[in-house]
Amino acid sequence: MTKKLFIKTWGCQMNVYDSTRMVDVLAPLGYRPVDEPDGADMVILNTCHIREKAAEKVFSELGRLRQMKDRKAEAEDGRMILAVAGCVAQAEGEEIVARAPFVDMVFGPQTYHTLPEMVAKASRAAGSVLNTDFPAESKFDLLPEESGAQGVAAFLAVQEGCDKFCTFCVVPYTRGAEFSRPAGQILAEAKRLVAGGTREITLLGQNVNAWHGDGPDGATWGLGRLIRELAEIDGLARIRYTTSHPRDMADDLIRAHAEVPQLMPYLHLPVQAGSDRVLAAMNRKHSADDYRRLVDRLRDAKPDLAMSGDFIVGFPGETDADFAQTLKLVTEIGYAQAYSFKYSVRPGTPASAEGAQLPEEVKEARLEALRQLLDAQQVAFNHGFVGRSVPVLFDRVGRRDGQLLGRSPWMQSVHAEADERLLGRIVEVRVDAARANSLAGTVVTTETTTGEYVTASPFQPAVTLEASA
Ligand code: SAM
Ligand code: SF4
Image (cartoon, rainbow, N blue to C red):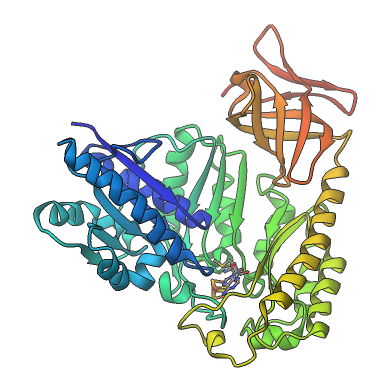
């Protein structure tokens, strides 16, 4: 019998990947994903703990879900199994069980491969099943194959956890020690994704460029080598990876940007701050100049590389002069897109115990100043594309009828009027307008009577694009 499964996902792409894998694990038990929680047989909240208020959001969501659970029971429509997963579950599992005893299962990111056993236990016994171990076995060795096609653009986790212990960050505690999946397992998953229609794969990891795995040839491979091997998969048109740490940018990975056409010219490389004093206090183990030199080398290898990053403002003890160094670095690098956050105290991390926590107004003002600068850079970057033709991989239908959405190589979201048959294809689009977060364009690739897709645009010579899906 089919059972309804609703998963709500917060946070990073790794959580999105984990949620799709939970669907795979639960598929043999008859669970199929649905779009809303009301009436569902199982609801999983896949949570994020990276910044504050995460736990409060979870508890308020649980309050709403409890009513749905009670309604379902009163209507004698079976039982709703309620679960909290992810990093809040890992960090605050016992508190969740104590404050919300109506929750049936609480489990961390490393144990969801055991969902069938947890479901069996939760169905038998009253009270919550709590599973926040860091098991010796790797969940990746025990997860089933994907239960269905994963879409045109899919995530593939290659690395998880972190040993870097930046002083502000909970990841080493919630996701555990750094772990790399073996290359053979990753290549097999990638081939299955491509066979199911995926054209773009984003390799995921908390420090994805620290990936080093056993290759099928017995040698230890780095990410550059893995990307070269993935590029050999017929039908895989685009490869991306995120998130990278500046200290793990190996020479071979930089060369891959120059040499592998499938590797897209966009790199998310967080620096966090521009002041060496703050970087040292954050335990980043790189200076602002190390980062500048690294970006220079990357741009020498790939001149059109679009840079993205993460920034934290208001780290304990950050002065106006420190913050000015962040603005200077941003001005020099020039970002196509970036994420910026106010420092948020994470219990248990070294920075949370610092005496020199900054007032909220100071953090607010710095965040506003940094965002203005980053937004202006993003707008300028996008405006530079108006009138140009860019190859877009359409991966979704748009909100408006007849509209498709996709991504440029530089990660911009692009929308255009287009036939649904162009979903999953790389199509030339002339950019007509640029907004802060997206580009609007016109498809200049057309289908010939022989079923080929050709581009006849005034901007580029006519080229034949893939004729078959
Ligand atoms: N591993 C990546 C790196 O080292 O750059 C980052 C992973 S973390 C999940 C994503 C981002 O969240 C970080 O780059 C950082 O900017 C932000 N972040 C993490 N902890 C934070 C905190 N306590 N306060 C504010 N932002 C935080
Ligand atoms: Fe967190 Fe990234 Fe630092 Fe690891 S390297 S502790 S994930 S910010």
